[in-house]
Image 1 (cartoon, rainbow, N blue to C red):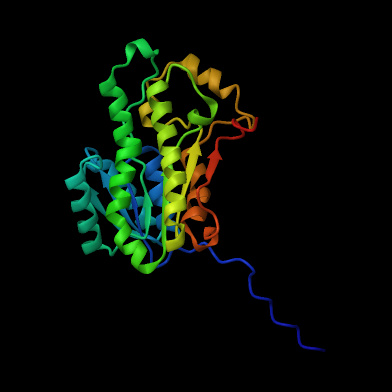
Image 2 (cartoon, rainbow, N blue to C red; image 1 turned 90 degrees about the horizontal axis):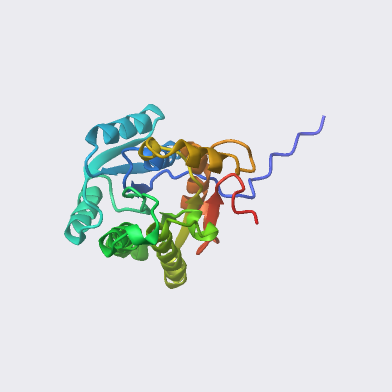
Length: 263
């Protein structure tokens, strides 16, 4: 019997993040918890960041380690310039230079008509969704540029695409984050650094516990795939965008919302 030919090599790079160091800000709970866990399961050493919920950060790290990954916990305010520089230095010392950056930290996002907002609240949205990604990226760039490889994955929202009303501060800040992502993608592409965005739909997490039930029911009724999204639904999208498999993908927004932005 003729010998069976050996299997052809895979046409696609794998999704392993072995040897990479990732930072997920605001990863003590909510979407950040699952995003950090996904990167750890793919092989990255994960810097789990928190500001006030140390117990939650410990749970995130425990989940990463239970899946065979590793990482460490770092407390820092990621909208403070000095704190961000210190955070990146501490991560570099403990885990190595950051290859994968996921700015995820977020404040509360109450829905109100514009008359009930003030500029201070608008500024807080911009601080988290434009200022923080800027500070973090600037601090991580020297290493990424030197090695000519990096992944920056912003966590956006479908609200910009859908133009959700009574939500103007959040929508405006997410629009700014979207534009910043696209501009940085063009600027950093020559260095082998990709900049993309994952835009989840409304995925209920801890901070949504007190949201009005009628709002939840109304949104749930519109989801084409006929179920709520869960934080782990973002895992595959993030690992893809953080991996070598996405090296020709930059400046893009990947909506993970069960079809809410199809039309």
